[in-house]
Length: 243
Length: 226
Image (cartoon, rainbow over all chains, first blue to last red; front, side):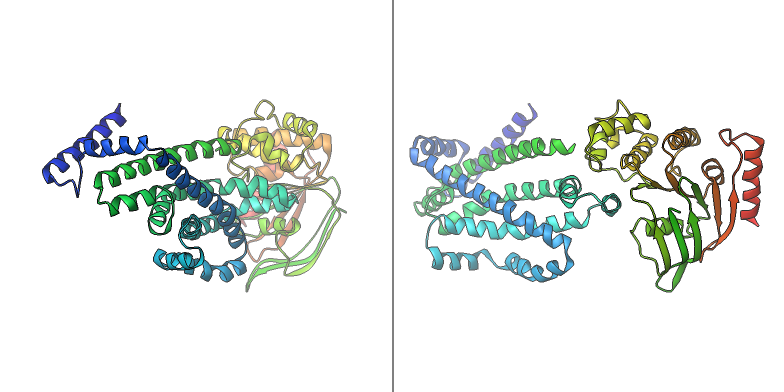
């Protein structure tokens, strides 16, 4: 009920503001936007564009988990490796998206690889540094206890490290899921060949503002939906650790 | 002889904590190190457990399986009581026996946050027992417990010891605990700590209101306050 009320307030404010402005080029009314949305949803190519964006998003999330977590783990364990890799990670973090964009266009031209690489590089540093902090905050008393009992390393990893890192892995997933769609849409807009970002780019060229808002609504829905699914999956996965 | 320490010195930088300790522990003995807070008792246990290196001196170790009851339980919060033991020992039969021994049967699937402080300390004890130790270290294990729970666990521990007869080395600053648990009490000075005196306990101690018990307690207290 509260959610419905919240939505009503949002769309009501939007309607009032758009009527006050009375300029569809800046802020179309919700009705104009929904009419554009219905039109978009009737077009079968919309679904392939949406699937393309979803695929890129999941590829980025997969890469973040496959690369960010182990690299962060190793950097957290060893100060030497941390000092060796930190400059690279910090440089990756500081490079502007536009520079990556120029690079990927020269390397691969327009296509899916650019958005995936740029999305991955944008989210990688924060995931690495989050896991580093996680490893460093592991309870030293527990590590001493397993040392006293000479617990095999694989068991220590499974019982102590993974369990301690779960909140940090959750944070990485939360931040990545929250940001991945924004990043994918921007990079698709700039160097993609398919996807919701490309749809926004086309709509911009045709100065079809309601269509831009309609695609944006789809992206927002995608973001909220993925966030919910990710939270559900994380809670199912972490239940076995008693969290 | 299960443990022999000769000329042990431990310093942290220029700060000497342990000053030339010599002691021998025989198999099956219950030795208690009694001293003020910060006199290096825990440091000594950490040296025996291999967590710290001595600055000087020689340590001969004759035990194979070490059980360590930590001052704070050091349990894995996201693992159940059973899984906390599974980390150390996978034999389900052994885990069941130990949980019965420390009176934690029925709580196997509880998480540490769901059990009381006394039960956590029992689990800490169970973890030390599950390795079937021939040498057991106890680092002020009853400090955070109220007197009733403390007495219950101490009584249970003595019963377990009667059955298993492992060697025990305990440190505490509580005279009552020392008299109750030890066959031999080594009284330590402030830092740099030395072993000041050795006291053998030869009476039956199950009753802490017993005249011999109270007499010994006050004798030790007087000595420590002098």
